Image 1: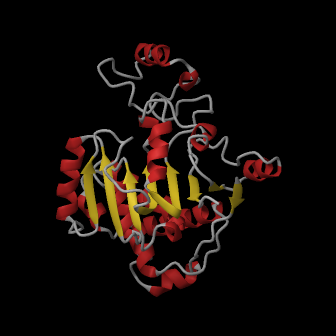
Image 2: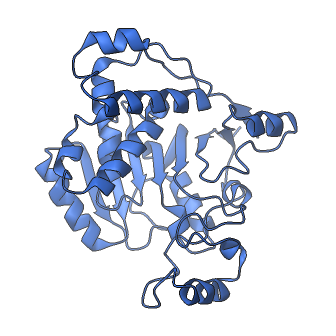
Length: 302
């Protein structure tokens, strides 16, 4: 396996940005979002010198989706946070055909097109979410760029081989019960050679804490039946809820990469002290990150 750095575009100085357009400096939230984006770009070893004013405005909240969910601050924050995470990764999907794997009602698909994806096809196993998402996408006038499809079994998508230049799985794999090998192989099948698979917002199962569902220590290391008993018994989970798909056990690095059926290049984070230490030790740098972001390029068979 070959490791590589992301080659990213950057952004202008604060003075250039804030003086360029009144919308950029209209609120403290705009500046905070921009600053957070800078930190995230540096996570991927990127330079910062050409972020455009319009892009800053989109990230900061002047955005059709944000306006559409104005009465739901939780969804607004999830959407904004996702755009900040995806912003430095734009070279991997801007102007490209993207599969949004586990698209729910289209939040991540909308973020992708706002950040430059040419088109997005979202697949989602829950039909009710697809129905809701199609209504939202139509209301936003994005039906020409976003398509949501119901896929009852996401291990077998009705999609040709290598149909997409990028695939995003945002907050998805923790909701798929183990084993997940077939799901990983399926998204790999539909990814074109040279394309990138981005796995984001999925907790790290190697750490001794359930960050996602119960906030209980060691729970994600327990056998599934015992973990549910503990979660319900401590009042952290309702007995009538679906434990299997609740997200209580995240994804492990080795679980993920061993499921990839062909040659690939993994891009690792490298800015925190532990990342640099792990890189020197030739250990995956995100092995102890609570919510790692995996960026995997599909290489051609030789």
